[in-house]
Length: 587
Image 1 (tube, rainbow, N blue to C red):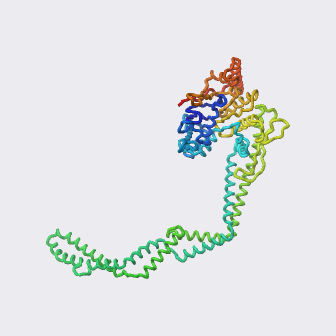
Image 2: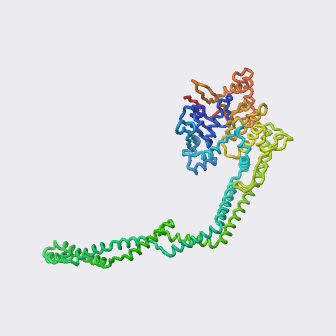
Image 3: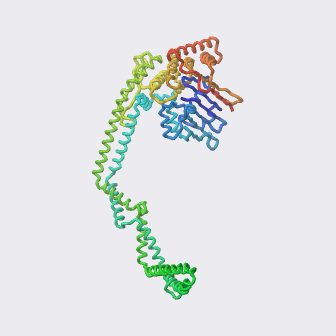
C-alpha cells in the first residue's frame, strides 16, 4: 500500500508530506481547492505526463516521491528482483521518485523528467509497468478505464486469473507471425531469387578459383619484402660471410691465430683454460653463422617477375577479404555459407513446403490457444456478471443487468475475442455499451462494482477514486460509502469526494485547503484528527458556516457509519487512523 507521499514544487503545492495507512482514506475540500493535484502527482508516479506546466511558479523543479509497502507474497517483488531493483522491507518499502526540471530558455515549453524506482534509474514505461499495476486510479472524468473494448478485455482477463493461458496465447501468436514472416521472405519473387543465385555462383566461383589458404597472405607479404630488398639482403649477408670467415684476416682466422698462441700457455697456467675454451666455442659459432649467411646469400635472387606475381596474388586476396567482409582466415567459412545458401535456393520447392508446414503448425498452436482462452473467458464472463450485478444491487440499482458479450474477431496476441460490456440500468431499457450510458452517476457506481469484483484477483495495492461518486446523492451516496468501506477491507482505498455520506465511512480524513499569502496562492494538506472530522462533514453538509443542526447531523452520520462498519466487519473496526501525519512546508 501507499504509506507516504511527498510533493514539492508541484502545481500549487510548495512542499507537503502525507502519510497514508490501510483502510479507507477520504480527501475533501472546497471545490477548486486542489484535491485533484494529489491524483495528478500519483499519475506522474505511474508514468503519466510530466510537462513543464506541473512545475510550481518560481520553482526550478517539481518533485514527487512515494513509498509503497509490498506484501511478502506480492508477485511484484519477483519482477523487481529480476530487474535488479530493491522492493524494500516492511520498514522501508519500495521507493519511487520522479523529478520534473525546467529546460533551457524560459522553461515554458520544455521540461526534463527523470525517475528512480527501487534504487535504480527508471523510465516512464518502467513506472507504468510497476507503479501503474500497484496504484489504480479511477476517475469519473476518465471513462476510458472502463468503456474501451481493450480495457474491458483486460478486466475480464484479470478476473479470469489464468496468466499461463494468456502467456501461451501471446507466445503462440508471436511464433505464428514469425513463421509467416519467414515464409514471405523465402517466397520472394522469382527474379530476385534468380539474381541472388547468379550472384552466389559468381562469388563461389571467385573463391574456388582463388583457393585462399589460411596464413597465405602473411607468407606472401614476407616474400614480397624479401624480393623487394634482394640486392640489399645479398650484399649484407655475403659481406658478413667475408668478414666472419671467407675474407683475408676474417674473424674466424684471427680467433684461430689467438687460440694457436693461447692453447700451449693454458697448459702452463690452468687459469687461462676457461678463457681458451670460450674462445674455442666462439670460433665454432662464428664459423656456423658464416656458413648460414653464405647459404642465405647464395639463395637470394632478384626476380622481378616473381615480385609482380606475389603482389598480384596479395591484391586478389585483399580484394576478396574486403568484398566478403572477412579476414583471409574467415573466407573458408564464408565460402561454406555461400554454398549453403545456394543449395537452399536450389531446393526452393522443398524449402517453401517446409516453411509452409511451419506456418500451419504455428497457426494450429495459436488456434488451440485462442480456443482455450475463449472457453476460459466465457466461463469467467458469467461469474463476473453475477458479481458485478450483486454489487450494483447493493449500490441502489433494483434490477440491473450486465452482459459481458464475447464476439469473434481476427486472431491477435490477446486471442480471437472482442469483449463488450452491455449495461441495462433500468427495467425495460435495452442493454447498451457502457460508452453510451448517459448518467455519470451510473457509470461511477458500475466502476465501483467492477473494482470490487476484481479486488481479490488483481495485484493492485491501492485504489484511488477521483470523484467517481459525482452525480449521486442521498441514500445511494451512503451505499457507495459503505461499498468503499468494504472494498477497503481488501485494499487500501483513497477517495476524493464531495459527499459527506461517503466521508463518514473513512478510517482517515484529509482536508485540502487553498489560501493566498502575500499575493501567492498555495495548497496545503491537513490530516484531520478524529475530533475535527465532524466539523469537516458539517461543512460538507451546510457550507463554510455550518449551523448547530448541521454539526449534530454530522455527529449522527459518523455514529451511524461506525455502527454500519462494525456490523459489516463482524463487530470489529478494521482500521484506525493513518500511517503518518501530514506536514506542510510553505516557501
